[in-house]
Image 1 (spheres, rainbow, N blue to C red):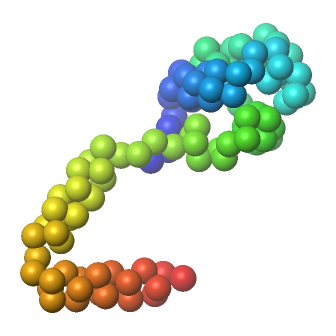
Image 2: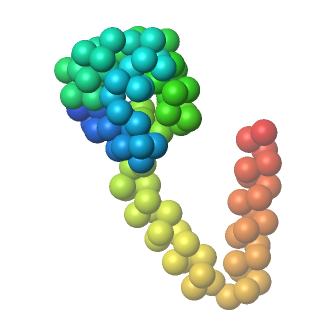
Length: 109
């Protein structure tokens, strides 16, 4: 699910930057931004152009997905439920279900 909350995106950038052991000034310089602009991005007070997102992600060695998306909790719950149901099946039915899933996933390629 896409994240549209600028503050949430800024918080993700902050967490990644700290994990990398970098300062705001270091990220800003490497991404070709002013210190002030990068600080505003982390605070969630400005919107970024796609080019800016890509430059920052390149500096932090992450993909844009890592800051622009979040896992849906309802999807996680559904996955857990399906996993439980699959594990509760007898071995023959479990194998059949996995084969069906495999065929389906291959059809998406």
